[in-house]
Image 1 (cartoon, one colour):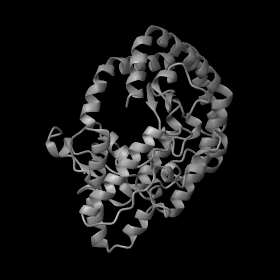
Image 2 (cartoon, one colour):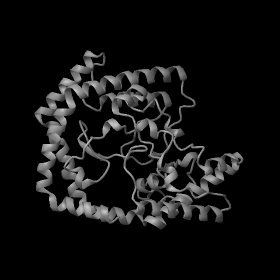
Image 3 (tube, one colour):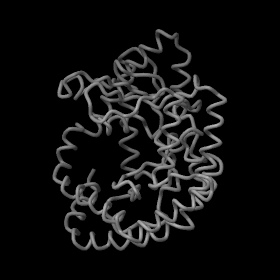
Image 4 (tube, helix red, strand yellow):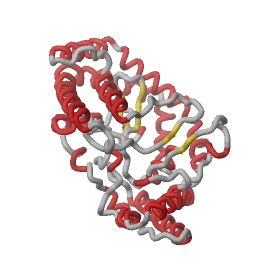
Length: 344
C-alpha cells in the first residue's frame, strides 16, 4: 500500500527529512542497503529516508518505468473522459522545496528549523509547472471530485492525496486492496503487484530484525549514551531543557503542530486508521503558527550546534564500528539483499 502510494506520488515525497539527517559518506551498512539508507540515532531503528529533491539521481531504467506509468495514467484518464498530460519524470525531479533541502544542515535549520511547521507540505504537489494542476483547477468543484476519483480512486483528493478509511475487519478486501484509480492501475501495470514484491522480501525479515537489534546496540553503547547526555546538557544550557532522546526536539515540535492542526495521534495498527496527505495550514491560527515556527527554528539551530559539538562524532564512530562488524558477520545475506534490490 505504501509502495503504491509512493510511486503514485510521482516524486513528491512530503516527508520532512532534512539534509541534516543524512551522513556525508556511506556507512558500511549503507553500501549494501542502498542510497538513502540512514541510521536513525536514538530511535532504535534504521530507516530508508527519501529526501525531497535529494541528491540521489534515478537510473535510466527508473525513468523509463516512470514514463510508462505516466503514459498509462494518461490513457486511462482519457478513457474515463478526462484530460491528463503525461509529465516527464525529469520535470518532477525538482519541486518547490528542492532548493531548501539542498541547503547545508545548519543553513536549513536557520531558515526552516526541521521543516515541520515551517513548510506547508500540503502545498508540495500544487506545482503550477505541472499542466495537470491547471487542468484540474479549470474544472467545476463537482468535476474536480470526479477527476480526483478517476485519477486516485474513490478516496482521491487534490494534489494526489488519498484517504483510506479502514473498516472493522483489517483483512477485508476493501482495506487490503483499495481502488487507487488510474495512477494505481498504472503503477501496478508497470511495477507489478505490490503483494508479490512484499512476499519476495519476506525472506529478509530476519535480516531486518537483526539490523534493528544492531541499532539498539549502537544506541546503548556507553560512548553514545555519554554523548547523548552531553547533547542534552548542551540543549538545556541553550534554553531547551528536558530533551533526553535525540528525537525529542522533533517530536516536541510535531506534537505542537498536531495540536494546532487538530491532527489525531497516529493509531498503532488499530482498525479504522486513516491514511491521508499532510494537513493544510490554511485554517491554523496564523499567530500561533508564527510563534511555533520561531520556536522550531530556535530549537533546531540549538540542536544542530549541540549535535555537532557533543554528539555526532561519537555516534558516527560507534555506528561505523558496529556496522562493519555486522557486515563481516552477515555479508552473504546483505549481498543477497543488494542483488535483489538491483534486479528491481
